[in-house]
Image 1 (tube, rainbow, N blue to C red):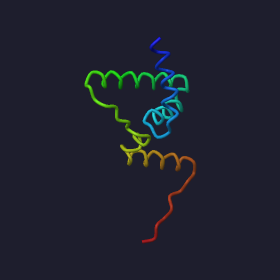
Image 2: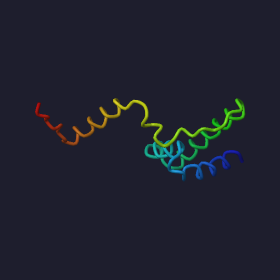
Image 3: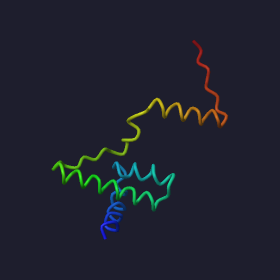
Image 4: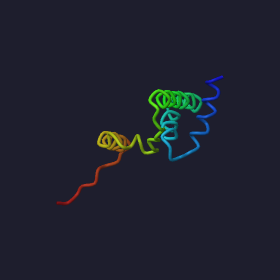
Length: 95
């Protein structure tokens, strides 16, 4: 009963494109599939609800760009590596 309710809430939470849950959903669903991503979002919501009730704090959404805020250099290097694997050559800058 709780699982199905949380999955329904996850469906609703994912619709807001500027939320952390949407960002998490897109990241997980790309690799694991939509059904597993909804269950993962439901789990994240359950953990958030637990901490909200335990600590008595208000919910603060981390935002859709949460995953882009950290490890920028690492992500840039990974994307450049992918581009080079596709045949892209880095432009030469004249000094």
